[in-house]
Amino acid sequence: MKFRLPQAYFSKIMRAIIEFEMIERGDNILIGLSGGKDSLLLTYALAMMRERTKGKFALRALTIDPMFSENFDAEALSRFCASLDIPHEIEKVDIAGVIQSSPKNAPCFTCAFFRRGAINRVATERQCNKIAYAHHNDDAVETLLLNLLYSGQIGTFQPKTYLDRTDLTVIRPLVYLREQEIVDAIPYHGMTPVKSPCPIDGKTKRETVKKLVADLTEKNPLIYEHLASAMRKNGGGEMNRLWPAAKSRKEMRESYDRFMHE
Image 1: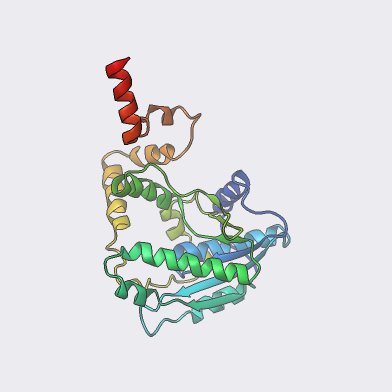
Image 2: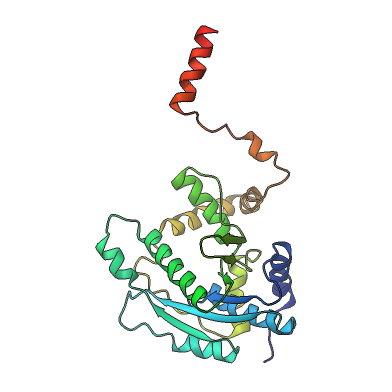
């Protein structure tokens, strides 16, 4: 197959793979293929990478059917994977039922939890040692703000994460690509993205944060660059500017006693 992805895309993906040591010879990688624009590009790019490295690693793809509708159709995704010589499976997971039976729980958290669990299980059953997700640079920046605004924590996902409970490694080869670049890449792989079956698609906290970043960047073009820079450990100095962790009641009592009696 003749791949058409421009060198600029390939270089950014290669940079992520090399910098974070994502892929090694003999890896068996399971791709999380939702059918959205991001995972389609990831699947296409990894197939291209596999060809250029002369089969250094193996690929297979998995699509989760969350059972939000009765007419979930992944046939087009199977054809897409077949054209790339990538085995493709569909796994039904009744996420819709779990959300309905637990209305007090955050639906996005529930969905992500059960998706990850199913993907981890299938990866283990298929003797894969790595899972590839299609998170891009905008996702990382938005996650940084989501954690800060809604959890009071500073952090985002890592480009590469080892899961010691399952002995699997999660990799995110698209972390240096912006979301608009992924939109612009659709003509190169030629596959029309599948609409998300999620009933609250476009109405999540992530969408709120995405709009916030866009609005702020429109007023100051450096906003996004500064947020992206804040994700990196630049010599460790920045973290030293944060307040120390809050003391426990016991520690506060000891400090109080020293202040009052010493």
